Length: 272
Image 1 (cartoon, rainbow, N blue to C red):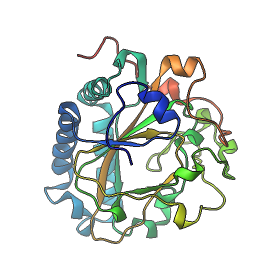
Image 2 (cartoon, rainbow, N blue to C red):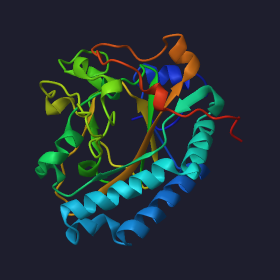
Image 3 (cartoon, rainbow, N blue to C red):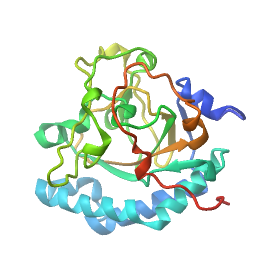
């Protein structure tokens, strides 16, 4: 993965499949500290091992409340706008979703309810624009087994998938498996056959480093049995003019319906 940002053409580079990894900024650190402190308040100081002392249902409920707090907090949104600016972009030009806290437990893949967490997918299969840019931040140092795998060789190659069944307006959640609304059934798009493991590109990462990549990248969460829960933050941003002018990553196999932008936020003023 690349480690430095280009001085010009960042969005175009991401749309062509480049993946960027770089160190913490002031505002990514503030966001991470805010989230980590909230996590400790909800789950305890040893939050990465809370699954050892809570039932699966109790853990699920606590995580749900924590996710809502982080997602709704105005401070989270302020941090995101500044993070966008730190990438050399004008925040006012983007729509974004508030950050989502992800928790991938030790042997979580053995829980049938958590199966969608491990589906290989493109985020664009969830009715996100082709110009979607993903930003991913770990709360702790993570080894390769705790992160996720990219399949860069399939960035511009079609994969047989069921994204045609996904309609944003008929799904309660979009991307993510931990919530539901009465009368609305969630669908989690995935491909029929996972590419061979030799196509995988995996990575370790340090606390509060930042990954930036296209929502069109095919990727999947790794199954792990390391005795700890992996916590991370992610959010998606969309440059509104690029979206309006159909600029973005190539659409090789996305047939989802609707558009998630109706649920995104937009800054009311320039971030400083």
